[in-house]
Image (cartoon, rainbow, N blue to C red; front, side, top):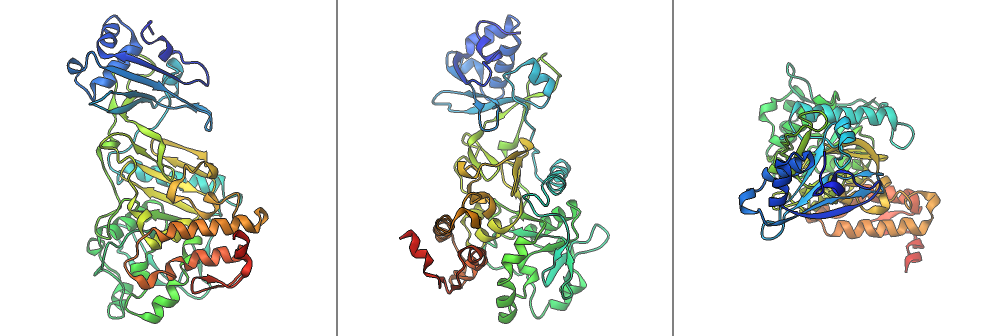
Length: 450
């Protein structure tokens, strides 16, 4: 199955890393002589490069064993300058991986996150979290106190409508975290309040709201909370009261839909990009039709649990839009579960685990590694220092880190500077035993860090 050219690649040392430079001409010659591993490498490279133009170029073949997850990463091929493309080879089948140990098992990514496969995966993650994590680390799927107003998402036969809950009414609901991107005409106001309660057409909604309703339906959740519709936007008293409750709104939600790369309420949540494309690699190893190549998913480039992709089309190092907005910091940190819609792939984060389309099985997240980036919840990002038992000093450091992160974010209205952080302040107040007044802690205990 292997030859002298690819032997170290085909049979990697257990738990070991390796790297080998091979020129395209040698690789093609070995493939023609019947080496299946060289054929896989050659076919993968041919998917991105013209071999006739790079026959003497040295390709770096890299395989890494991830000791944190105790498994092998996909096989990566790096093309040299001036090409500088980086792509990976993987299999979707366990038996194929056994036949070729160099190939890691990973998942394909839907070209568009609105696909039935993506919606089913999101539903599977939610169901598994409730079943496996509930009442342990993550909250249960049981009913919680409902916010004052919610959107009943309806179905294909019944249009959505604004619902007012009764006192102490309980249920389950989803929340939406998104960027307004400027003023929106589609809000709830004093004038249209009764119209919203009577119902509205899905087609009349801005794209982001429309797709949030579609996602909530796919998750089999009846209620959805969206600030633009559930707070009366031109009523100062209502906005003041309801915005102050956002801590509990997000904290008590079953899951938050995070439109991570959406620039506005009209941009939508669903994403598609070239970075999602996979190409089948034809070979006779293992189960046919189960080996693929795509732009490399950088193990060290993450936005939360979601991988970024390497290369000019892979958005490596790009800051997700949602990470730049002031209000969304507390929304994301306080939510017990996050469903992340990014350009590169669909992702999941809860207080226990993370997952993504290319690596769909739950894996424990390590808060100390920083791998969760800017989408970690309070319990994840500060797992070791946010709890009361971890000591006051650690919680103070965590609060200072949070404020520093918040200070880099943008707000459409300068008057929102304190309200947009008030939910997190209430949460930290439970640990710091102090009163938070207009951005200042009443307690003198913050002097501990001085």
